[in-house]
Image: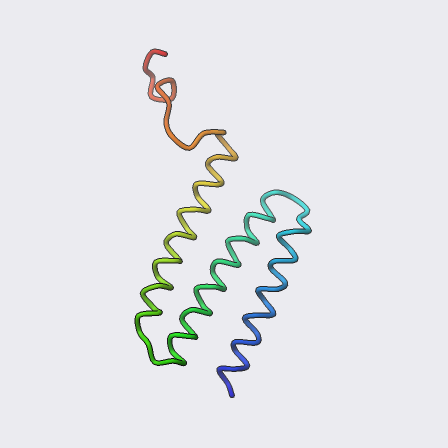
Amino acid sequence: MMFATAAVALFSAMLLVIIRSFVGPTLYDRILAVNSFGTLTVLLLGLLGFLTARPDFLDIALLYALINFVGTIAVLKFIRYRALGSTSLSRGGRP
């Protein structure tokens, strides 16, 4: 019963975060909401793995957490510099 309550709480938090990602008000609030949704998904995967006694779900949750972190950093870098890779100008080279 306690785990069902935790699952309901996670789903309600995920719903609120999705609403925040559509409402905004700024772009950074939306990025933070998507990152929070990824974190809540990791928690839900961990809870599901614990409930079903399948430890391989924890590996999937860890992989998803790493992808969520790298994806958030990549989006923020793209917003700031308008490029993901380094150019020859940013390393001091000639064009």
